Length: 429
Image 1 (tube, rainbow, N blue to C red):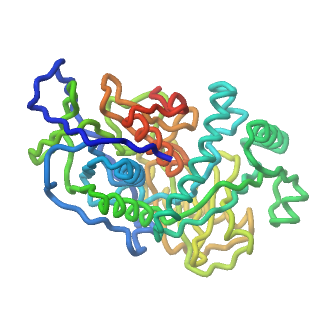
Image 2: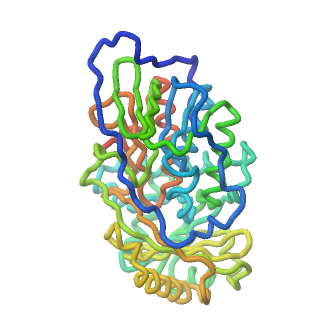
Image 3: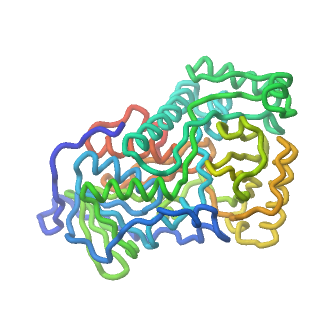
């Protein structure tokens, strides 16, 4: 869990500086973060109270972004008794978190045995173990704070597909076992008998979860606000300057705020300084069925996905809806195409029926969104290049919520002067 930070320290840019400030254009990339209407937009309790003007100009930490990354960061830092200001150019909780399907997985997009070849066995095992821990910590946090966000611990069923067949899946299970990550390999007969799915094999594991993402986000923001945090919207940051004692931010409305540290939790609208060949923005699609769908009894306790390209994933909600998605495409703008929306919804529905016999019919909700991934499946959680007090959280990949939990832990510890032992795994690259 995030470590406590003792004391309150203000940054005041009027004090003498020991070094010239480092200036930067702080405009983040503007993106349309979803198309059509995500299912979660129709659910209650997804708003956060906010002000147009904060009560003061100086803070311990300023967080930019009110999505799940910013909300978890605010909870961790206010728990450490820091004075926190949260800024967003949009209405709070109306960015990419609204388009999440909240498959809160410990399983990283890159299988463990493949990741070990990319970054080394020790780092790969640490990344996977940290992901398991983060899911457990997130579930415990939601429970401890009594957040009403449909948080449910779940198992995960990872099916063979065109990217990994039976033998590769067995190798993956062996790698996980060696790393101390629990799971069970199922052969074709086991999979058919227990789940009625016709694939050559699968891995069944625990340590995953699901939730209503905007309710989780709004709940965390409310907790942070009850501890003294302030949310200001609309507030678009356009410039920043780092100096010896802290950071100054300027907004498009001419406001100036200062803080000891700044954390950009802006997701796919990342700072230009964070551009890298190690990550890219793609497009993804998702749907939600009507409630009370006919479905296998085991599915309500399960997240299902496949080792395929493009891959299918699906889960249920407490009212018996099916949420499914996939058909990822390497074009950051493809999600805006209505024809692709229609075609991909049909493909997702057809794959779902083929895998486990569920007939969606006409979806109740369909949506598409930009989606980020990295070459190693790991997020970027680090200081902005050339700066020491400005951090960026880019929780890319299918583990965005899980990675946001890790980011809150790592950044809170770093601000406290107590570096996290796994921070090297998520350095800018």
